[in-house]
Amino acid sequence: MPGTPLSSPPTRFAYLGPEGTFAEAALSTVVAPSEGARYPQPSVAAALAAVRSGDADAALVPLENSVEGSVPATMDGLADGALLVIGREVFLPVTMALVSRPGVALSDVRSLASHPHALAQSARWLSANLPGVSPLPATSTAAAAAAVAAGEFDAAVCAPIAAQRYGLATLVDDIADHAGAVTRFVLVAPPGELPPPTGNDKTSLVAVVGDRTGALLELLGEFAVRGISLTRIESRPTRERLGVYSFSLDCEGHIADARVGEALAALHRVCDDVRFLGSYPRADGRENKPVPATAGDPAFAEAAQWLGAIRGTTPS
Ligand SMILES: O=C(O)C(=O)C[C@]1(C(=O)O)C=C[C@@H](O)C=C1
Image (cartoon, rainbow, N blue to C red; front, side, top):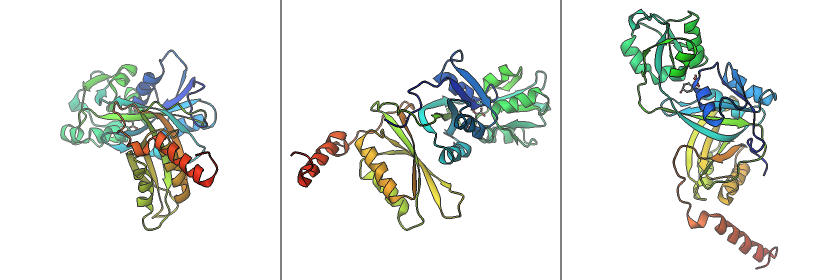
């Protein structure tokens, strides 16, 4: 079937670097550090570009966080440019450590940096405990740790592994405002062969709806009438003009399932544009909702046969 990255296993992996990011930790859950080559990139856009140019086979990029929401660079990077398809999702629990050079005390911290998502996840702690310090954005949590090691800032918010990687000392080992935060990463690659259906899959897509009454309801209806549950939906500007949006969404099921295939075909008819971003095994430890008997593959096959018999195209 046309479409997944992982049938010829990727061996060259791009990820949001430098070494010590949460993205690297997520990649290690997909492929052992000893297997394959890893190419840390300065940004999500650069990681996606490395795959599009053929310098890497696949990229592991953050898609959303349970506290801070979606990662716009990934949403937009997958919605635009040459098609990249998700072959796998990874959920990584994230712990935010406050780190500094050895010998620096919390009371010495005058400057601090991290990835905006990490700063947002620790915002309350930082304003309560470092009220005079204005946090500065870095391209990643590990980039902030490396900058602290280089003397550019006094402290960084990063993964505990980044402190080890850059020889930093941990001032406070967990400053996250919400315990149990999780970041969802996706492994993307050029279209190839799809991962086979497992019975517990998700499908991702981006749909651009026209500026007309009921367009979003129409989009949602195509899923609802086929018994398909959505697991995420959010809007992004298309950047064309105000009022025209694309919807990035995940639904339960695999494109090989009749109901999902038919829903996407219906979207293709009613939306201005639909980009299929992959069907892959669900990895958040949850089970897809039971599919009503009227929405299962046998029901679709039986209905197609019934229609074919009426039209005289298949035997009754
Ligand atoms: O900076 C990193 O370490 C990343 O992997 C990026 C990222 C993100 O984009 O959300 C990943 C997980 C954390 O939520 C904070 C930052």
